[in-house]
Length: 420
Image 1 (cartoon, rainbow, N blue to C red):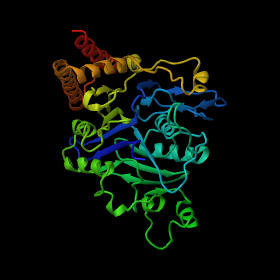
Image 2 (cartoon, rainbow, N blue to C red):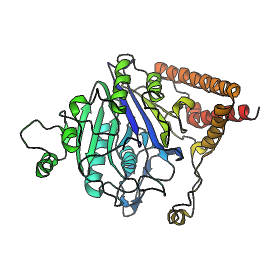
Image 3 (cartoon, rainbow, N blue to C red):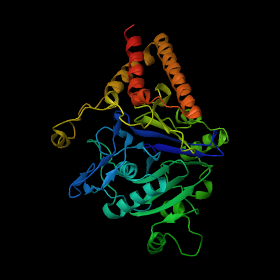
Image 4 (spheres, helix red, strand yellow):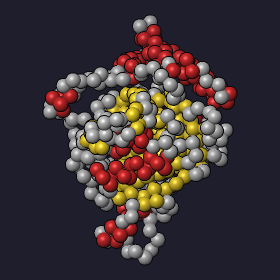
């Protein structure tokens, strides 16, 4: 199952600088799947009799939802990763183990990411939201659009300004590990071993019934619910081990730029190429000082090495993210009935980025110019955001249009160099 890959990372003091928590994630999906960056404002839902339509099923709505920014495959309701107005960030990974995957339509792991962000103002509350929904509605359904059937269980990395939680699932069963300092990463495997801070009430009983655990030796979740030799997890080949090594290499000096370097790393396999590739990336800075804003960087385009990390900060009256929003289709149901009729979901930034990528691959001189302009733009943005994080000064009028303007600037780099 290694071809479908994602990696999520978190670094907490003292592994980071300036008393910040740094969250990062690469979303690795089918090479031609478009990922969009979308914003949904906070909302009050008066008519609780109405059901909420997720990707496949309807669930009960809640009285209030928080503002969220999401990086998501454009065909579905949920998200691969995102953040909310309270500084909660979530990313999910596909995992497999001994518990059989259900192909019946239920909540996707990506639906659970969005639901956790919309309904929780801390990381642990988001965990509560996800496990409650998992118990009530289950997880399952096709995780790709149209042409292939592909289902999996999910793990989640959930972070806020104070701490992080790892949540790993096997059907309706789950285990959770609290992370309060240092480094932690997850990939496409169960990774919680004997440090279990919360768990499904029947987790161990079920394992005994299935003959996976004798009830005598120390309970190891990953070893019990999968086929892993957990003693070798941080030394065996694979992206989980490589991701841990990259985090550990920079431990004590991890910044948001360090996290971006990790997400851009190709030799480790973290920045993936091929039929499954890194289609979008996210890095968030979560200051432990509540007087400072959280800053969330998104690419909205494939291959972070050839993409610009653009900042988003929650303020009132955010401008719509039109250039990273995919077209919507009125005849969605008819499209779904024709699996070979895949709609064109490319948003403006994606289209321009792909054209630029063709130039980069085929014209060495223009490639240097385009990549140089992208790096200069990104460096200026990093300096601007670092100033905000250091000085506690927000120009609200500018921040309202920050991400949309950055996207327009990136598009202009592509257009001016392609046409020159």
